[in-house]
Image (cartoon, rainbow, N blue to C red; front, top):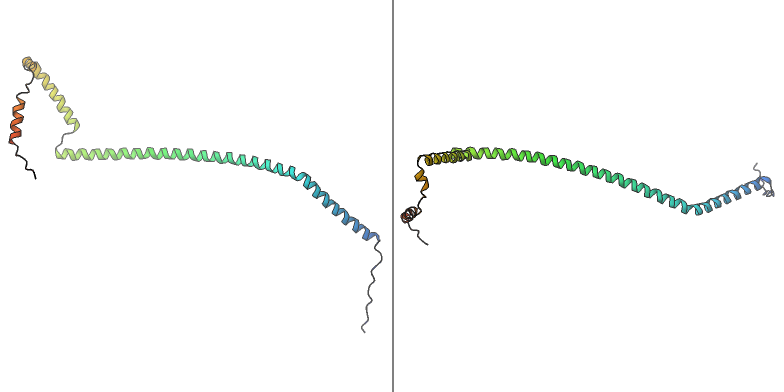
Length: 166
């Protein structure tokens, strides 16, 4: 019940219109590919040059934007640094004032006169000198003698004990 199948014979229709149209289509596709390849070779250099020019333009724009951002950041940092410097100076001035006040209090407790006290004493001495000069014009005309000061200095030196040398 098995029947043999007959082998199909190759058709001798190689010249049939279907085979011919397929062959023509394949030929046209091949020629279109060659034409595209040829055109790509011819215009490839032009396209490459155009791409290079576009890349240069983009690079310039990018650099200018980057430089703007850098200058903005630099100016912001400079202003922040000056603000911080101003604040630090203000704090330093406050610290200096506190230090001066505490030193003045400590010197006052020790009985050391302040600059104001010394200035007041100098002004008072000047007033007293003027008053003395008005009262006795002869005493103010006499210069103080230096010879009287010399014997007093020699007496003070003689009272000091001699130092021992080791």
